[in-house]
Image 1 (cartoon, one colour):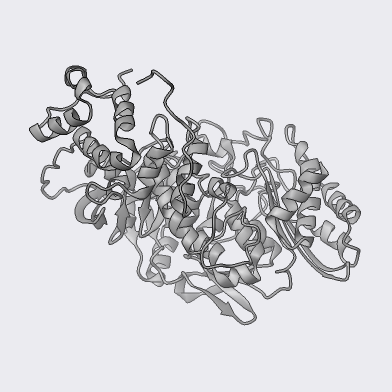
Image 2 (spheres, each protein chain N blue to C red; image 1 turned 120 degrees about the horizontal axis):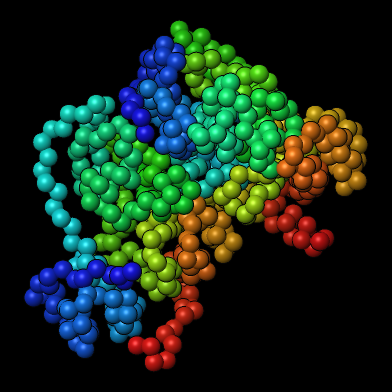
Length: 341
Length: 262
């Protein structure tokens, strides 16, 4: 690992001013991704400002919704009583990610700032426009089984790895950010992460030094019917090939409101707006779920090795919506799908 | 490959302890060191309950640590003066800002129980407990541990009495090569608290049902221990070991020595 200066921040304004003034400085949260990337020499910050002792670790009611502190850990957030009761989709998504140890370390702000797990990004001997702009994309015509089917560019076909962020996209979260001189702004979740375009080196729309203080969740009526389904190559502790956050509000069997977001398919959590529009006002039936999934996936652009993600995502959307209709009960859904097969 | 290192010179008391347990094996042990075969026999002759104390004695015998030399002040680029607690004792040292907690424990404090498996947060062999939470010491910078309390595998036993999770791993043979075991045990110990606190997992039937404590099924134990990889594949026995400590009744031991092997 290359040398760096470590400091332990006790004052947010001072931390923000340090990182804003220095393009090679980074905030350090749980470090579960950043330290690994530094060991691999993918990232080599000159300064790490540890923000884990700043007072942004609370989860509290805010208006009709809730505000989740950026330095609260993923484990603390998933198990918070307010979150489990009102936003079970978020708890499920967080718990689907990583391992218990990593969730104990990882912070919410850090989760949103984690980098892709594209193997070309991780391997410093390979070209990668995200790691070194201008060197090309190794995955575009390389091994791209795990890569994007939506929203990619010739410059980058990487996917965003977070599970938590997929639920936050479905729940219309708002990211609260603080910059130099107490400037604050609110970023709607859909605008937080970016598609790669010509600048894949930028994962999100934060400016240098801008610090996430909290993630706000508006009130919703999805708690009774939401489900996070993660499809991966082993049953735990692996990144998603495809994941789906699904949430519904129904009256009778009519869908009044629906949210669907996909993980593992794009450079950012992918809101399935075509599927949502298709389903709104329709009956909650398996046939309609399948048709909605097809409406979304007809826009997919697969790469040479990931065509399988189209049918996988279609089936995953259908199953996740069924899971949500069954009350988000893990065992019920799994048992049901097993008995069908 | 050598199965075990030779025994260090035995003190009178240590020699008596081994002799009492395995009088027939002593000459061989003294000349060629302790082997897995002796260890297994030791296990057979003592039984799980009596074994705990003896085993700890042997472990201390085998891994007598070399006292760390007092070090003067160290001046290095990006040095961090760190003060924290490890297994109940205060430690002060200067570390390189790049140093992980794992390397600090192993290389600076001679606590080599925590293992470096992948060093990238993928295997769990380095799991330790920091401020009551299980974490990966390979992805934790030592500098971030100021004022924190770290518990490693070396800190779980009380004197000569093994932690119940250690005893249970021995009873259920929750390991083969043993490399992942310190991480598995630290992880399992912290898991017991998570269950008592009613924390949920991805396979929890309904995360909205909050209870004071949760009773873990085998599926729950497997999911919650998925951050600890065991290449020997001792998983069924690890689950049994954890279930025994987590539950209120003994779990049947599924293995026994074949006739004539000891």
